[in-house]
Length: 320
Ligand code: TXA
Ligand code: MG
Image (cartoon, rainbow, N blue to C red; front, side, top):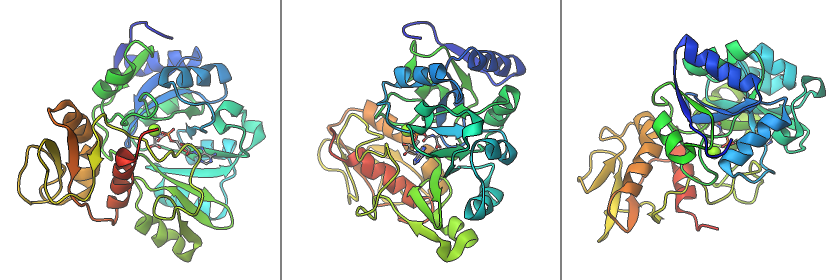
């Protein structure tokens, strides 16, 4: 749907029912998860999934994450065995996506898997997402609900900033509590982190021990998840990382109790959970302020800091 009205649905029974009706009609609906807002469509319908790509203006070769209400439902679409099963038991529902061998009997479309033999599955924890998925009763493919290449949305207002008039509806569940996307883990003989996210590697390692291999921007020689372009999550202003202080004309993205400058502090207490939850909203606010660039304070590269630094590196990467 292009250039229509976008309905704002409350997180009520009527709002959920309307969102389910749109999903059943093979349309796309934005909905909240604990990580970011997703733009969802029935993963079994190529017609429905095509609407996601259309609304996002997203290149079609990126595979999409499929959201389901329970691990039992995930089993219908992917093979949940070995290390994947251990991770699902430890972290679902939650901000973890598992890349599993796809079951052809599940009917997940080729547009979702981008023709791969695997499918990304996740059981989100946010109550509104769970209610929606339970009421729909099927698999929902959903990338973040933003135009391709822009900062991910963590409120319904952010979704509308990017997609107003391009999607039929957004279900409003308030701000996302985690604030960075799910951790993506590919589970074969070994488990590999393809994208750092809401479940820190330290937590994965407590479950898998040495059965976990870490990849991504810190390990550029290795493959990362398809669609993980270097420049992503991009604000309009140039971004300068690990800065001691803003230079003339720059606005400041602070972390911790250091000196105050014009801009936003992600967490005065130096709390990484608080920083992750506010990261994308902060980038939007800084982008809207007067200034030629964004200078970013150093952020510790542990726990959720790894996902925060990953997103900031993408925000700072040269644009295509
Ligand atoms: O937190 C999240 O993960 C959010 C919410 C909405 O769930 N979704 C999200 O989706 O971040 P998206 O489309 O922005 O990122 C999905 C990434 C793709 O870029 C791709 O790298 C990876 O997931 N992916 C999906 N299916 C895959 C597969 N079969 N193999 C490898 N990577 C896959
Ligand atoms: Mg995204």
